[in-house]
Image 1 (cartoon, helix red, strand yellow):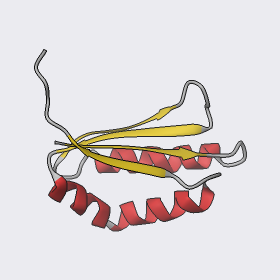
Image 2 (tube, helix red, strand yellow; image 1 turned 60 degrees about the vertical axis):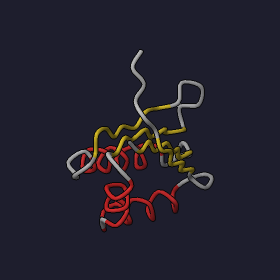
Image 3 (cartoon, helix red, strand yellow; image 1 turned 90 degrees about the vertical axis):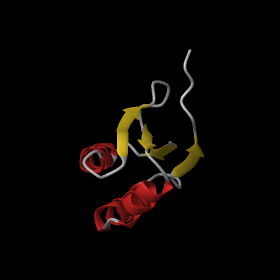
Length: 98
């Protein structure tokens, strides 16, 4: 499984626009093949920071997601609006049975 985390810092002037774009991206991404989970959250300590957590079946599914024109348009739009460069981290993971 592939885990993706990321964050975007908005300004007070564009938080609602970035949030709307993010929710649209999350909802669309959930319908893609290989998407196990895709969510956006507000940081409890900094409400201007949006945090993304995603789960994908494999790297091929994630690569296909990044290649979708809507994903590319989202990345371009939020980079232009963000107060600082967005972050993105990709991890390989295996579920652990407790």
